[in-house]
Image 1: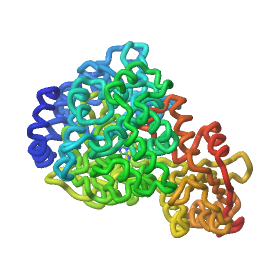
Image 2: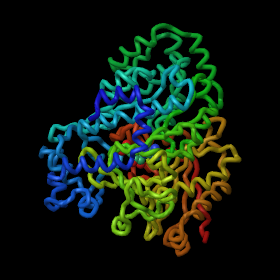
Image 3: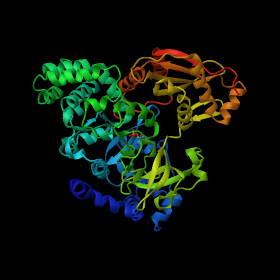
Image 4: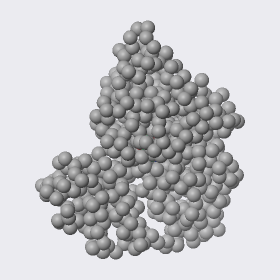
Length: 584
Ligand code: AMP
């Protein structure tokens, strides 16, 4: 079904295929569900829900429960421990994909078959085709993508568990396809030491600066991290370029070997030029200056990644930000067919051949998505979503997930042909909770977006944030961590206590009725805002990466659960401020 042949076809007829897929979205979905059910109705997992001889599709909607990871974990654990994968899916499960979402502190293991793995490889090709069609000049140079891998893990059954991207970067289809148009040599991408990998990829990007037409990473957080790395290492990078000699600490033999065909001779003029650009106190527009031919910055900047938009716009100096696609380890949801739309207007179009999608209605703003939702609201299929409504995505995949809640909320914005288009709404997790209050990621993000407006006229940028519920004292309080810097430099801004307290007040004002009532009643005490210096959140990323997180899928936690992480952010603190004691 999928495979090299299909991928070749995408290269040749991609846009036509996209039109066909979206024009026949409903039919493709129904056919996909039927095929999945015919093949898998007899599995241990599904057979319980089907009465012999009855129509599988109808029974599917009435009998098969909507589940979360924890519900199917026992099946996944059995397969990971050596039982046959046919308890869940008729085709053999060939590997697991590790998702960043955690289950009891461990990555979730998402089953994958050879067919679904191959099918997914279509997405980056379609994304690339759409971008090249919409942004002129992209096919006349190379892409400076910062890609990273994470070590694979072997389950007791011998099946490997890895990030989807790690497996994908190792395929011949990537190596012989998209990788050819990337600056980074494949061995620098596959290097397991993220620091050496990052250094070599940046060095290559600088050496090939005139050829680079696109710069990017999977998530905006990775690009922000890479720019910080450049800030820390540009002098050493320039010295390597000037002398033609790679730093000794790059010890990975494959990286050294790959770099030997790129760093071939001293280039003092190039080194001088880069040095001159990087020496500028303000790094505003630095991407444009270092890579003058760049036509776009490609990185996911929607949802929780939107906090990086101001930073990337600042460094990009007007280069369009493209948020190319939306998906998860479980399934690819959609791609952006209008790459040049502004980050806050981005809509993704569902690719109906990636999974069978159902949509669980949730309240406007994505609120109200709780476990009870399943009993209150019935999911609708792709043809029946309504424009302007919010839904949680439920997927049935080609690899053993049936009516599985991914946990993401989407707002339907329109249709492209017959395929729904949606905006990504942040995950609806409750992130902060004291007593009866439940503050979600969206509540927090909205409150902070309002509060930071006070800082903008002062030239102060909020580069990233996190939070935690401090219940070590009674009553407990919510603590926010903000990393602030001046627009023109990385200096810590002068913090005016009155203004910072005003920010605290705006955040609290923006929270909901329950929070305010509890605060008024003294059940929750005044919100605290801790300002940390530039680079502290990069240390947090290093900390999580050292604990096994993947650098390429890293999403800064909007709420901290680990004491060590709180300690780390506290160590970068340069000021602490409180809301007025009595507020409401
Ligand atoms: P992972 O399974 O580790 O790859 O993480 C997938 C998660 O990343 C999704 O469930 C989303 O919460 C988030 N994500 C993926 N694509 C986007 C996007 N375009 N915008 C915002 N968040 C996204």
